[in-house]
Image 1: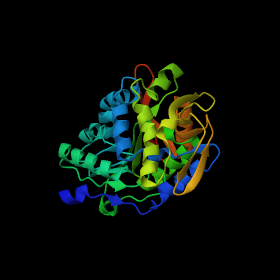
Image 2: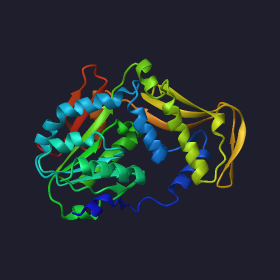
Image 3: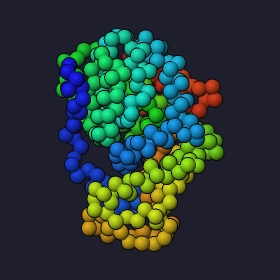
Image 4: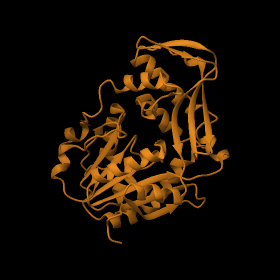
Length: 328
């Protein structure tokens, strides 16, 4: 496989060209107002999220990275040689070498991400780091149905799904189960899935991770308004909004909101949108799962928990899943 082929993303046609506009107009026209969190991740949003992962308050990334360093060899032993690794919402692919280095003769790495230019840069960096592994990037919104690149049709070997970062928590539980079930069918019969999951814990620990003292998370959240103004001819006043993180105890989730500080009117693609003081745009959820809850979620989607690794403070877990139909 040539370097040029490695650097060219397969653009999945299941993502409509007007998806961003459709979601924004629907979400801002709804009561309460919402935006799908996937649209936070344009190039600038992806860069800001990478900055978030290095913050002291954001314990998730460093905790999961340490866990993956501990468990990668065990995962490689289970999956065996010649695996194809498919990473959903790959971002910078910073954790991926921990798996690729542990695997025996991996056949390909398939990063799936919606931020196409950020995806290209991440793949180029990883290709230099792991020059012997074919890179098959896919530009797609993994929260919607999509296809794997056609090159994989002739590639044998087991499939290893990789879903780190507790991104599973961005789905509501029913959506998370549907996603895991869909991924199981996509990966095929010889499959495993590695999922990073943030555990339930004290809100005093959780809230700063989503509203840091340096304001990076606030800039990340507000960036979606900048994107709307730039791409959808909007005039949303950024200075009229404040980022706010909330813990919803009954749902066991963190919520991110952009809260209007005064009443005003704005337009997006020529449509008028009214905001009342104190009204918010709900931009993201992050559900937290204990072991019992996540095992039940996985089982409802056709997966068994084969192994689980926890950090010493039980803040974060890495799960290795196998099909429920597989003999134990």
